[in-house]
Length: 309
Image (cartoon, rainbow, N blue to C red; front, side):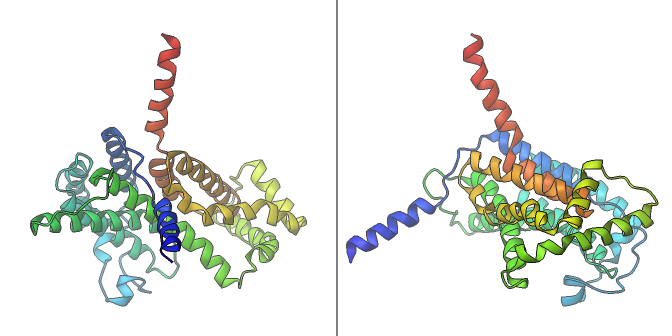
């Protein structure tokens, strides 16, 4: 019995992600990327002055987020956001800066979703801010109590901030994949054959909204292909479901995160041009936290130096 328990324990230990050894510059670049993403994705939505169909916290708790649609209010809040983002990037009072950042993202997203149609535009960004705010508040409260968080061997606060963020992003994709399978009773791949009809409807709606076709020729070609040959849709869109299901693999090392990040960005790139969906924020988060461009640039330069010498 003890032998069996030892085997199980060793197996579970191997499942635990290991700290890849994130450098200070990597964390700084990630925070800077998130700060820029947040700042340029908080438009002053003056056209949304009411919540005709409350959604999220506006529905559950009756919170009024219409202040996020007031240009004068948002103008001042955005000015305040600049020093707040600077504190966040340089690691100053992050436990205080992050709740402010989260509040703005949550308010703008909830107000947008309280207009009668639901959008997922702010979902990933707000979730990332939520988990980071929760982590830093927890960490700070433990310090105030005189009981600092005890990190596992090789882990530290910098690595944990990145890890909880990557976990949130991976959880979003895994939840999306599971939801597709549950809602379709496991027949999502079979049902995807009918996507050509939805694409025709979406493309027509987009055309009558803009009165022009602005998609590349390859996107039009793929749309026509899956409409005329439904089975092709399984081949083209099936890998997207697999990429979502394996998203947690990104937690097990830089290379795995890079591969998963590239696969998911390809998925989003196709969805933007073929399905007319908006995934720019998701792609930016994958670029920042999964692909981690600064690290791979640094690693490439480091490999070239000995050869040139």
